[in-house]
Image (cartoon, rainbow, N blue to C red; front, side, top):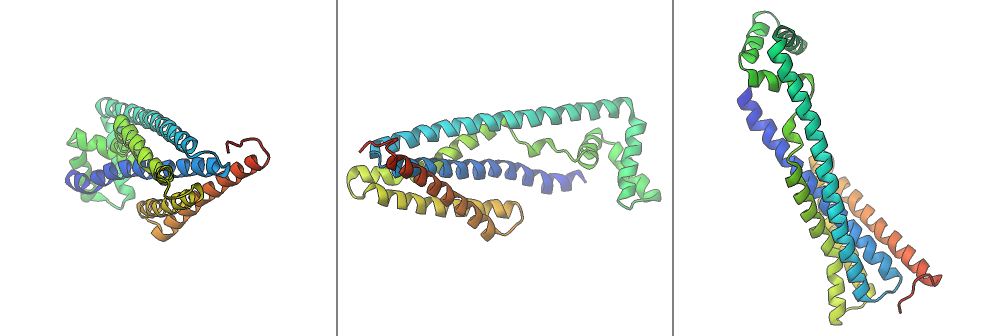
Length: 245
C-alpha cells in the first residue's frame, strides 16, 4: 500500500502544487502588465512612462503575489502539521480507538471478516503507515500537497515576472522607432492572448476539464482587462484628467 502511494499520489501532488503556482503567477503577471500598458497607452502617455509604470507594477505585483502565496502555504502547512501532531498523539495514547477507526474506514470500503482483520493488522503494525492512513482516509489530508512556502513564493515571483514582462516587450521596440504605441498595444494584446490561452489550457488539463475551454476563458479574460484598461485610459485622456502629450 505504501509503495503504491509513493509511486502514484505523492509525485503527482508535488508536481501539481508548483504547476499551480506557475499557472497563476504567469497568468496574473500577463494580465496585470497588459492592463497597465493598455490603460496608460489609452491615455496616450509617452512610451518611457508606459514602460516604467508597467515594470513598477510588474515587480510590485510579483512581490505581493509571492508574499501572499508564502503566507497562505505556510498557514495551511501549520494547520496540517497540527493535525498530524494530534493524530500521532492519539495513535500513541489511544491506539484501540484509532484501530477501530481504521476498521470502520475499511469496512465502509467493503472489507469484512478475515480480510478486514488482515488489512487493519497490516496498517496498524507500522505507525508511519497508520498515521498516513488516518491522515488520508479519515481527514483527507496530505502535507505534501501544500508544498514548501519559500519555494512556492519563489516560483510565484519568477512566474509573475516572466508573464509580466511579455506585454512590455513591444514598447521597447517603440523606443527604437520601428512601431508606434498603438501597434505595440496590439502586439502586447496578441502576445497576452496567446500566452494566456496556453496557461488556461494547462490549467484546464490540471483540473481535468476541457483545455480548449480553459484556454479561451483565460485569454478572453485577459482581453477584457486590456479593453477595460484602454477604455479607462482613453476616457481619462478625453476628460483632460491625464494628458502627457
